[in-house]
Image (cartoon, rainbow, N blue to C red):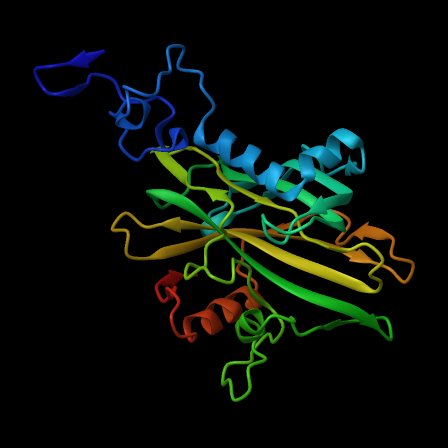
Length: 303
């Protein structure tokens, strides 16, 4: 209901940030002449973002065609990082809402022909459970660190990314000083100045134990026919501190895939591996990111 005495709606949008508008008092993005939502059940921003992601990357068509199949033991399952923020009983839930493996038609760019690729499609939703976290955050954000590798003499050997931008993020630029955890790098669009995962939804704080989940979608893959090639991901959740000038590492989950000498895909590790302690490779990747010109540095991360 609109209250003319105060010039605003009398009730906040119950969908909050998921409605796609940071102003919770606004109706249909303040565009009532052109938009309506009589039932209040119109697709949320998250649902629209998911549909757009699936269409752009060809994964929903592949699921319907059964060339992308659910991964037993991972699809719809939840994996917990225990004792987060050094607090016994505080847990972080990494919910693999979707986890599929197989082939799909992926477009490098919207105006290019699709390429047949082999890989994974995941949707990961992250929030707290168990004992309340000892710190309050105004929201949760997702950050991802990735590496490419091949197997040589039964050992994983990290490979330099072909992209010049990603090679610098991974520590391969000539003369680059910070090469710790070389081969690991922040996984975001090449054009992005932000380290945070581009296909994600901000997790909004509502009460001490009620955070709307932070959500990320990803569909890493390689061209069909590629052999002896793998990718490893650390998907991390960071809390935004109340003064909004720093971030707090909360937890991460390790997952990925490998294409063997026959091009057959296996999930590696076999199950996602959650952890509440920040892996050194994540710290090193962020530190290297901070030394790259033109990006938004993450200099205030509390570990």
